[in-house]
Length: 139
Image (cartoon, rainbow, N blue to C red; front, side, top):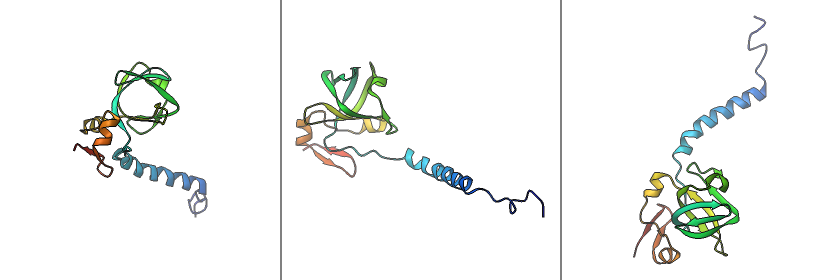
């Protein structure tokens, strides 16, 4: 046998594990690109402008970001509010019990095209939400 044969010097277990992880991530990447984000029935549609965190404008009205605000970009990754300063974003958002903006999703073009979507709590209370298809229907 040759001294450098792989049968004599087996690949370390950690290298095999790393190779397996890389292969699994390669398989998962296309699935993540096709993922549909599910928004809660309490999510409203609007335009967000972070003036200077925590101060913001939602649909042109003064709003305040909650201390634990979660802002997700189009890839569903968390972003910091300071990185969005002075930019207008089409969003879905929720408010906490004090009226502070708690959850924000920066919308993809296909998510933004989903119509109708309520922009006020009164509309959300009057309309019907289908969580499976992520669609609203007016009465």
